[in-house]
Image (cartoon, rainbow, N blue to C red; front, side, top):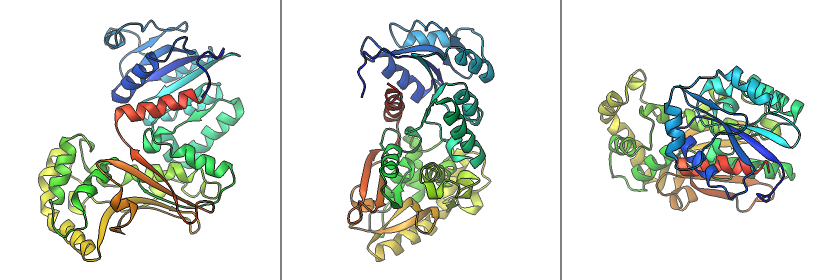
Amino acid sequence: MASSSTTKQFRVAITGVGLVGGEFISQLLIFPAPSPFRIVSLASSKTTLFNPDGLDLTGADAKWKESLASPFTKLSLPELTRELSGLVRPGSEVVFVDNTSSDDVARAYPDLLRYGVNVITPNKKAFSSDLELYERILASSAESGARFLNESTVGAGLPIISTLKDLVATGDRVTKIEGVFSGTMSYIFNEFSTGKSDGPSFSSVVRVARERGYTEPHPADDLNGADVARKLTILSRIIPSLKSALPEGYKSVKTTSLVPNELADVGTGDEFIARLPEFDTRFGQIRTQAAKENKVLRFVGVIDVTTGLIKADLEKYPLTHPFATSLGGSDNIIMFHTERYGARPLIVQGAGAGAAVTAMGVMSDLLKLL
């Protein structure tokens, strides 16, 4: 990591000040002085604070929160892009940090990059949607030299994207990537499937996961597998032979949804939780069959580079497999099978969700610009 005494200065514009955004701001504000980072913009869904010379955010965290609660002008994305592009000059870089999950913000990345504004984000949308948007991001970055960094889109603070990029850049041949990519699914199946034929019902595990904040308000948004499919899309596009394999992004991934067909149209999370016990017998039978084979159930993502198969599915693993022995809570675990790591795969494991570790991943990306 470069020294904080670097002469290069960075003007940072932050969009999204919720859990992750707030934690990121806190981490940025305690960066050792003299800091090369100057926050010039904070934007919520209702308010934009902007000062090209830097916002006064000294003092308690509450100060910027109070400022955003005051009636200020809300700049549109094109307006903010123009303001930021005017700040790009030699020796003073501009960084746009998107802590939202907005499609609209994601689609602004090509314009930001084309104007020389670096983009850092945990937002998966731009990198897992249609291939045309991803290619425009690449082209804009190449045209201006501005960088986009998105480590925290796959494993929060875990070094998953950077590990894969290093493997590819150094000439290793990746043959397969498989892992438990969803903290929500990790928790659910760590609790539900332990290798025994009995245990808590599937619906009760999902209910507790929701109560603890591990799931989205509507659990179907996790159980449908789309989050895992998005992460697989992001990783597959880093592998040269698979870059164009998913033209529609995550929608092109072969994905098994765990949402019962009968509940596909349930509109609220509360109703979904209330009706899920109707299907406990069905899930229980799947667990019993796995136990008879001395296996556990895990919802995994697989990228088989050799065959080109990219899937998100419920799979069975032996009780001795790392997916059975090494996981706890809502951990992620990803295995890289490559020529160099042929006998024993390279494994990255740890907390894959949570505001603090996700913000750390964003902060880590920012430090890579130094």
